[in-house]
Image (cartoon, rainbow, N blue to C red; front, side):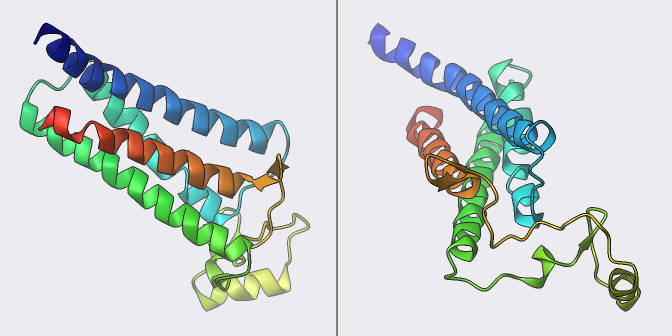
Length: 173
């Protein structure tokens, strides 16, 4: 019985430390690729970072015991699960775009200074004053590691983290 109690404590406490560091690694890799290797992210790549930011914050709160209430911990845990599920879905969608299974949405190419051009005035500005800086397309993988695009790696990574977080569901209940 003592072994089970220890494994439950290990699972709940340390799994959030693992999720925290895994999210930090994912974000560090993305920013390293962007700022040091000079590969600009597309619109969807930016969105795929959001679940890691959310998990970084929420898992830190749980891991460091800033949250004592069990109900609040369960809610935060559900938010972490939902964020990884969201990340996996967006990554899967992005992989579909990269591989030509899904048409690229207009938001992937209508960017100006990191903002989506939604008005006619913004579209006119883009057409009249095209920037010299190339806007990355969501459908083109600009960086590959071992034959996998960063998006495909992110799909695998976020899916594994979702499965890892889901595996402790019974321990938290």
